[in-house]
Length: 154
Image (cartoon, rainbow, N blue to C red; front, side, top):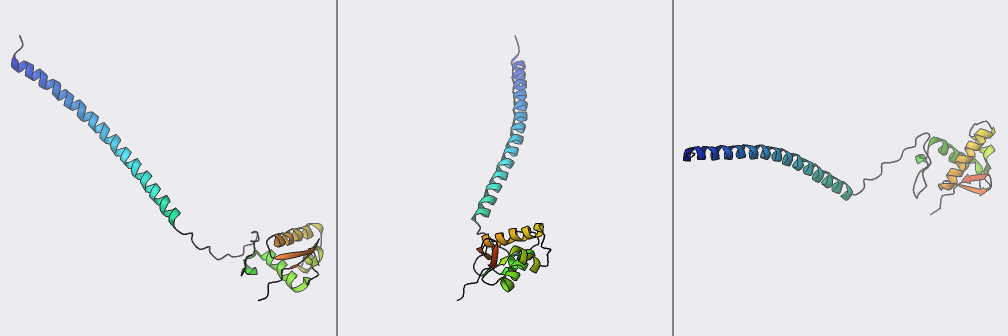
């Protein structure tokens, strides 16, 4: 028959092994918990940042500057011709100074801009003149005839 001390030692050994196993498991759980807490914090930070950005009033648009090759913006009240890309500014300038109320043909406009009146260049001028009409900077008085938009007096 086993002795009482032997039984206690066996039980103690069993409990020590259980404690060691639980400590190892606790370390794994603690590591997993730490990783999960970090992931949670990243998500909370991201949500807070997005909420702050969405809550901010939109910043005032910076002053527009004309850049060669950019598209002509839609005209709004008080908008200066200087916001147009350089090619468009030149077209508006020629239309203002030379087209009058009757308007100007694209071939004449191309010549006034110092371009050869060859089909490719005339067509490019026509395309830009039509874009100026679409965007409120010029008027097509009749097919193929363009003039500058008359600013409202007041």
